[in-house]
Length: 279
Image (cartoon, rainbow, N blue to C red; front, top):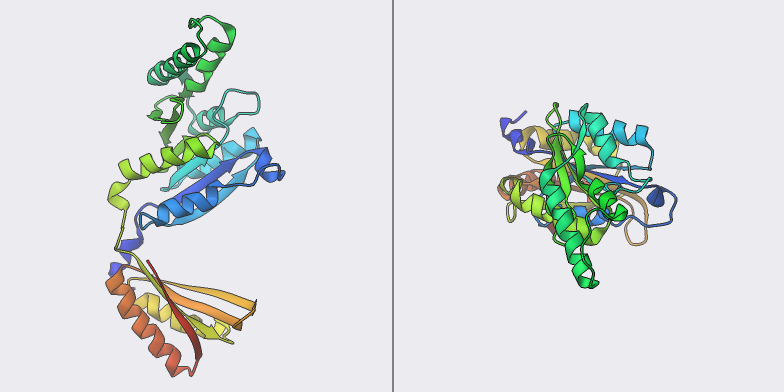
């Protein structure tokens, strides 16, 4: 195996989407396509996604897996303070730590409450029961770090697991979560970004079977520092049964690997359709 394959050992990115409303169909998930888009704009890819309902045992298990990995994970949903919000408690359970009101989160929540009171022409009363309850939105696992929320100041938080995984906890509302994800990507993970240094080249192989092309795919990955991918289709309206076969990675490696891939297909007398390039 070519030692240059270490290029793919950057952190893998994962996504956890939490909420019964997604699994019941009451709401359509918007996070998965948007996170893919935000990562792609930075030359990054999503390695996996997981959707979990509002069940403490399942949420805790999903977070334990994330913390035990070496992955960077975004978790969207369930960080509020209503009875169906369990994510903060499950994060603490997954880490084996306690929960406590984060001092900076307390200040940010109080700033928000003061702003709302001023907008309504009222005097802020921190002892009012509903205001006291709102501080619970800043009760995070011990050791958590703040993620600032530009929409309404109510923060998210980040935690590190002993296995090397980091989970960034965000609200379920896209208008809040998406800017927060971008701030994390452009701050903590800017060094991972590969804008302008990521290329994907592929070709449609007509009437092909993946099993027949597997040896060629394995050889390309063994010789070149790229990832090979195959996307089969059995009922395409134009191409019928075919495989989109390609390589992706750093441009210089992709270009060399693609030439090698085409040569291997020609040697097999493969019938080829259109070629595609994605950056």
